[in-house]
Length: 471
Ligand code: NAP
Image (cartoon, rainbow, N blue to C red; front, side, top):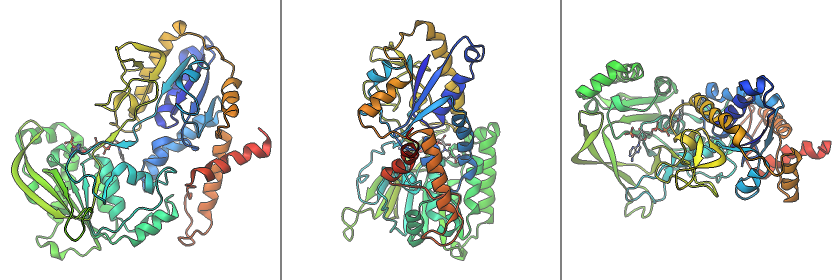
């Protein structure tokens, strides 16, 4: 059986790995060959381009994925855009099955007036910028002193932490030089995180929340009036250990806070506000077309874990707004799409057409299957479910017209697609690590790696090995 997996992030690599480890393959009942495609020249998806640079523990998952691909039984084709470089029909003609693991990389929309103003950013775009994504403009205007970050999930924490942190504390990480330089120049003094519900309804996780207090020269500011709990909040705190732990963290911070905030001494402040529903982003006469303030409606707990508006509005002067209200999946050519949820319509594994029938031989896993929720490890269970369905279907799958392994290479070469390979990733990886050990524009600090950002350079470095070996 030949399987194409589209998307070389954790979801795609887990699906490929679990397939190779299935009983059917281990027992010899099934001979399998898998090709892993990605639109970017480098593998690892959201771990390379979505995890914050100061989270080496999570980035460490790359080592496990690297090990899987190093075994040599899964081929990697990077810099290949499914839909333009190769169509779904062409994949179907070369593989028994296609698994989409394309994730969710766009920002969910926040539909409020003023969202289009200059200085109003999607968090996913900012994350892509600081993670050196090849398709994001390298210039990011970090000129705001006061900043609003909307959302109470871990992405909001990442964005706020990076904006508040001193740039030198990021210097040992893999941030590109231009990111370091821009953060170093940032005039930010106050970063405000706003949640629309209460402290007991946050979607942060305990480690990530606690980490906020570990940045040198950043004071955390909380507002005691946000800490009124209803019965449902009490219940959530008692029944959910994570919530309980995080309430402990937040209440310790409040207790340690001086009554007079003027006594805070750090260079930057990170404010956590709850019960603030975003209403409008405003510009001003002095700065027409540019973010100048943000208006919220105060909310109150409604006894069910939700909130209702109180009619009271408040405004904060801010010159930038980052919307961290969740990711959203993107439609794929030739497949139906659930535009409400941002996922491929599916029954837990099979991709479905507009009539709700399975598209033969086409499957989904990861965030494109179930939406952008859950930690990286959760995609493993997801992959297991999807490949279970694929293996159950295998006898009934139509054989591809061109099952030979060379067929896809002939097509890509014939089209002049400059695809990268696993050997190419080794070359790029070594190059980036080498850049990290040498003095960079940021100074002679040894760094984990310095990411190569321009797509053309990534491709050239990855493909140099091909040209040298003639492979
Ligand atoms: P998330 O956890 O779903 O959080 C989204 C937040 O946005 C929620 O607080 C939500 O509030 C809020 N929100 C949604 N619509 C809103 C609106 N219209 N107005 C105001 N607020 C709104 O999403 P995420 O932060 O993008 O994270 C995605 C996943 O990646 C999560 O599982 C997360 O844990 C994971 N992740 C983990 C890390 C890590 O370091 N471990 C880092 C990044 C991401 P409501 O709850 O009220 O809907």
